[in-house]
Length: 101
Image (cartoon, rainbow, N blue to C red):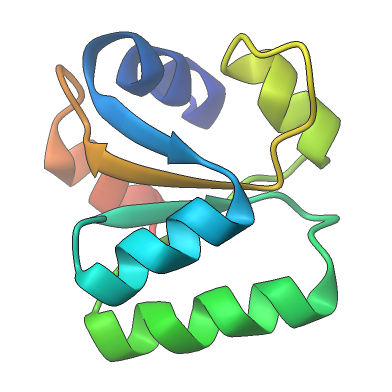
């Protein structure tokens, strides 16, 4: 299954957090299992997310497109630079683990 298809299923059937501030907050609290990062995320935000994800043992998934492409993929009319996945819904954890770092 391709990454964009998986993310659509996760948004429809699971629980996600959209936005850098909310995602960083949830990573700090340990309530997120995966973080999806777009390629054009600002460097300082990317460093913050990577640092807190490493501390909290949260897996990172790098989305190969821009924030606008990520937003369109998950069905939002705006760009999404960072998205946290709390519950993947019907998507198996093993499928997300293969894409994660």
